[in-house]
Length: 88
Image 1 (tube, helix red, strand yellow):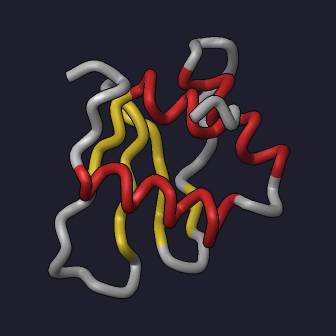
Image 2 (tube, rainbow, N blue to C red):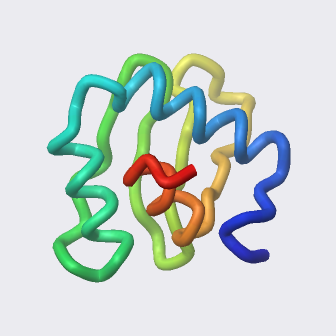
């Protein structure tokens, strides 16, 4: 899977996480983007309003903190980094 072909679920979760949990935190966005590029340490697991976010070897892992029945969603590194940088 390349960074441009996210499933609908991945795209929805990523957009929702950016809007609900990361919109007002430029420093956290930059830290996640840098870590995804290999330019910095991985940020600690971040608990937001709707999601817990952490990094894995394959990308950004989002967990819905309000519904434990939903499986975590993995956003591949290229797509996660572009989204964090506002590149689409």
